[in-house]
Amino acid sequence: MNIAVIGTGYVGLVSAVCFAELGHTVFGVDIDEEKVKKLRQGISPIYEPELEDLLKRNIDAGRISFTTDLTESLPNVEVVFSAVATPPNEDFSADLKAVFVVTESVAQHADHDLVFVNKSTVPVGTGEKCEEIIAKTLKDRGVDFKIPVVSNPEFLREGHAVHDTMQPDRIVVGINGDDWAKKTLEELYVPLTRVSKPIVWMSRESSEIVKYASNAFLANKISFANMLSELCEATGGNVRDVTKGMGMDDRIGPRFLHSGIGYGGSCFPKDVKALIALSRETGIDLPLVQATHDINNHQRQRYFKKLLDALPSNATVGIWGLSFKPRTDDMREAPSLDLIPMLLKAGHTIKAHDPIAMENAQSIITEGVEWKDSAIAAAENADALIVLTEWDEFRGADLKKVKLAMKGRDLFDGRNIYEPSEAQEAGLIYHGIGIA
Ligand code: NAD
Image (cartoon, rainbow, N blue to C red; front, side, top):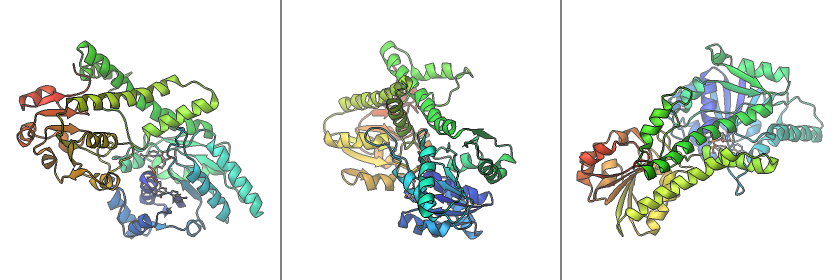
């Protein structure tokens, strides 16, 4: 099948490359000329395990090509995916400008029937608005093409995006009664349904809600663990033992039940905010969602305060981890972006290391930080070491060597990845989260 994917970011690029790998012929479209230039050379503009190899292979096989010109991609395509960003507005609502621009452009330039699929995370009702834009644009053009709007939200995890796209738990598709669109999506996903990956069909509205509900639920689990961490600190408990004890109950499950400095990234914060905005707009109370957001902010601020209070003046601080989570270079809403300015303002010297995200971090934090090319170099002569991202190489660090490299002894484990006893045996003073 011939398809176009508009927006070749973390979701669009992975989707486009994986659709090509599954045998479709794909156009990747992006307004960012630099990105498209790199992609044409087989260079991935983002870090995602396995992605660049798949990209190169499918360019060589002639199954994927890239353009900045939407009109170049439209002739002959049966499906157009929109995978543009939907970042939060000041008032927490999702910024849908790019989605609507893409919708209108597709309707403006389509020269045949095609299915328009929203892969971006969009609030309930957006599909209907896209349909109105398409109907008006086609009417103004005086043409009568069929362009149904389908919701097909994305559930991939950065750092595992290729795996998640090729091996999805489920494919959610929301269609409001268009048999042709349903048949087209069925055909598109045959390479996955043939290997027993299920499509869950539902209305477009339900599908739009599923995505937010899933992210808010996971964020809520994290906030629940973080809420307990404060209780543990005050009462002599250990949140790791508490969540372990809870998570072994298979009605609860261990995943996303970890306490730390709170969730970040491009999805949880913005999707929780968008639900809060939707709650205001619809008048439907979503108190668990508001609490999830509040606890996350509280957790981050209370750990940062504890950390800043404990540092000597003009301290040298080593930072391990800059991206919002391991296996990605994505810096959106990363805790490091909150903490580093606070440390600099307080007069501390910062040496930072991240295995992958350093280049992106440097483009955001343009001065004041010494960037180090190894974890141990970031710890050298530091009064304190702060772990902000749970990269595997930090988990496996030899804490005795770390202690020897450091000047001071304070280890702030913002991700609760070390055993307190292990740090203490290495001669470090351990500051975890939720451990009395
Ligand atoms: P992104 O910012 O990485 O990518 C968006 C891309 O769209 C950029 O390359 C940008 O240049 C391009 N773009 C913007 N306007 C355009 C236009 N008019 N025409 C063509 N290209 C245009 O965003 P992302 O992280 O890939 O997220 C995309 C959507 O997927 C969002 O709604 C997000 O919530 C959702 N989502 C993201 C993830 C994730 O882990 N990143 C997971 C699931 C769902």
